[in-house]
Length: 482
Ligand code: NAD
Image (tube, rainbow, N blue to C red; front, top):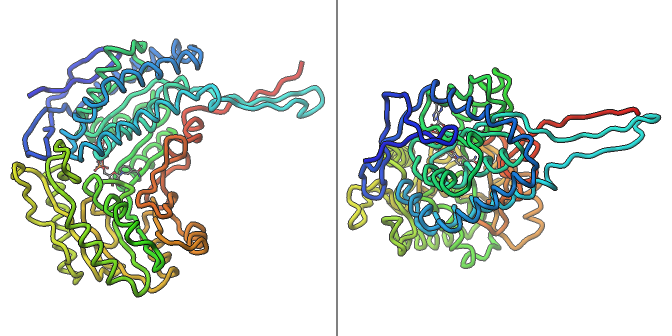
């Protein structure tokens, strides 16, 4: 079983730690690697390497920096399937979803190559007699990102390509639960891209190394994605140590079905919304909110579609849904099902005891549907992050919007309807930052921003889009008289 190494200053180096975690294949319940829980000394070594690389990299013209990204795209395309299979092996999601994720990762590389347009500043002559002014964007030094387990390929690349193309150097800490995908990606960069040493560094680990990132005076800013309690902690600690920070947290997303929605057309995307990645997506539907009298019909149709989801090993092309990431997370999701029952919700589809043939030791929960959930029940309030759907019936659009806005989280909300008026009301009044209209997952492309509001995001500048070029640069204003 391999023990992973860190990638620092262009070399693969063993961590100084004596503490290691296990990496699992969730479909089979087997251990497949050991990941080091790196120390503050490991992190310091990576930051030093990134600092040493900074000046040469910062003075490399932006277009030359972008050429390394063009090369990365070629290399990732050539190794697309291997990256996707590594991802499914350690994370569990269906292989087609993994392919979609790797595609999104590459799209961020593509978007970042627009640096020569997207990093530019602006100027104005004659702000006073004979005085001109311009504002330019400058890189800031070393940035770090801390990633969650659910999108091992894509999420780090919401930040990484933009940080380096702007002239910064970078340290990535992947989730300790899924460290193999970025290890594979960094191996490819190391072997085939020829990036100068120290521009990109990879440090594995858990809380200790996160603390070291948050405290290190050599790190200018941190991008975090994960659960809300950790996101809040990261935001507060970066504030205390004076770092720039964008910290994306958890979610509890509502999908509202108006009475005029085309249910038949909606069903495939509803199924993907709630069960894609086994519900382990920050944009996953969590509450299904049928509005008005058609609710019984919605529940029946959704239950039937849910029962048809094929659950099994994500590497099996015929499966729609894989396992959840770990035994501990499976137990957490099962506990929520018990909680739903204890609080009086009606279980109409039971995903407990799901044991797909050939995967008897895997970490599976089948599609689970609760009807007659009320807004105050635990399963309607807390992020479950599994394939558990809570149906909360609403009498009208107002009640549905009130529900959306009372969840605390505000990542995304979706509405299915044929009414433009209802859509306008919804997008105007709903708090979440990403709104889907007749779409179950409101996932923007790399050239639009990604991030939530409320308890779903701390900080102001979101991931990718145009804003990310602001996050990774300081605006220097120069006022001149000649
Ligand atoms: P997590 O918060 O447990 O872990 C995220 C990262 O933080 C990991 O790298 C982990 O090592 C580190 N970490 C965890 N606990 C820590 C602590 N106490 N101190 C310091 N570091 C700590 O999140 P997860 O379980 O890996 O990911 C799932 C969560 O991420 C869900 O809540 C999901 O909604 C959220 N998520 C949000 C988005 C978004 O865009 N808003 C995207 C993906 C996932």
